[in-house]
Amino acid sequence: MFDPAPTRIAGSAFDAHHPPSNEIIEKCVHCGFCLPVCPTYVLWGQEMDSPRGRIYLMKLASEGATEMTSNWVRHFDSCLGCMACMSACPSGVDYGKLIEATRAQIERNTERSPGEKRYRRFLFEHFTRPERLKRIRLPLLAYQKSGLQVVVRASGLLKLLPKRLQVLESLLPRLGRNEAVAERTPAAGTKRLRVGLLLGCVQREFFPQVNAATARVLAAEGCEVIAPRTQPCCGALLVHAGEEAAALELAKKTIDAFEGTNVDAIVSNAAGCGSNVKDYAYLLRDDPAYADRARSFSAKCKDVSEVLADLGPRATLHPLKLRVAFHDSCHLRHAQGVQFQPRALLSRIPELQLAEIPEAAICCGSAGIYNLVQPDAASAIGDRKANLIAPLKADVVATGNPGCLLQLQTSLARNGQRTLVVHTIQLLDASMRGIEPKTLLK
Ligand code: SF4
Ligand code: SF4
Image (tube, rainbow, N blue to C red; front, side, top):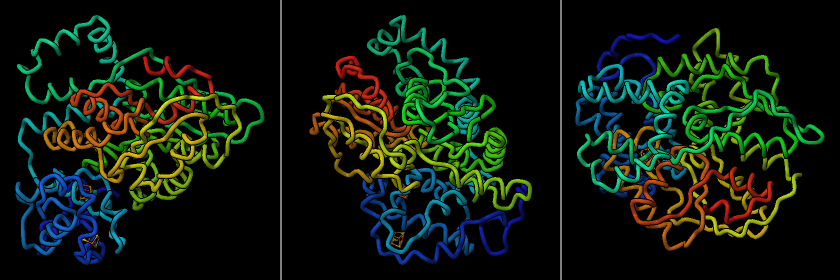
């Protein structure tokens, strides 16, 4: 069970509640194969902002050779948790488990400045609560539809706001019609699967069109889709930021919401959420009431592209004459190992031309709340990605995560590119419905 105030391990900077595993730390042979894919190492060229350097810092803290000083913490705050280092590591170092444990230690045992604490609390209290996002949706919609956003952005007024507000404003998605997903969507034709749909928080309120498209595509491919109303936030943002206690509570509530739905699979269309729910078995491993339930829950979790690729095509696809650059979301490619399925699905669409973005293994700078708490690094990483996308002359960029969608939209716009960014499932939906590519590009 989770102990909110664990005691400190003698001779170590860490407390006794799941410190970063020495066994994993020792697996690192310092070869450096992970360095070229680490966005912060690529950016700054500093060893301590590389995976190898961060693992060494964990080792020092574990052996009591350093405290968790603000300088030490800085190197972990700058890590995007993108897991590109894991995919590149020939020794199988599970950096994901190390950074998750380290972040939880940091949040329990170090003190952030009052301003930072307030800001992080604001982010967690809003981005993990769909009902709160729903309340701010309407004023934001009015801000955009009235034309005020265009005026404010053009006037330079934003520069007078505190940096954090500027960043939040710059990442606002273009809000549209709210398309709620029904609690049950019947399968078209003979039912092939009964699936549960994770609605997400940001996805549910800011990208409802993505959830609606997901339910339509799954139904068209013969899935009965169940979207329980009682499902809360899955806790992904919290767990990736070291807020373990709050994350565990949401994990348990999510499991409760899907229990009894009798679904064959639990489908996610947000890579960060998908990797988190697949990890519930690990997160809740020492909770006697939930460990077994979490194991069976996680075993059913799949990204929507995995489900559709496994099912094989049944619905008719109409041509979409578009050049599409596909961006791998890190929590899909590295954390879930899902890389080929979205490409395979897009390749099924007649006349669609798929373009590969160079440095595909490297993050776009979104990474949960990273672009909100580390805006300068996130912008630099986003600019690099935008500059790699520009020569592709793509009509559309497709990706599988709402955070990447926001980050790419903002980075492309900042670099003068008007390329549309959509979720992969929206292209499949448009193709199934025979939507004119021109309509999509409007
Ligand atoms: S998770 Fe990403 S940013 Fe962090 S060390 Fe690994 S590659 Fe670098
Ligand atoms: S690739 Fe793996 S073993 Fe090599 S330095 Fe990076 S984490 Fe360590």
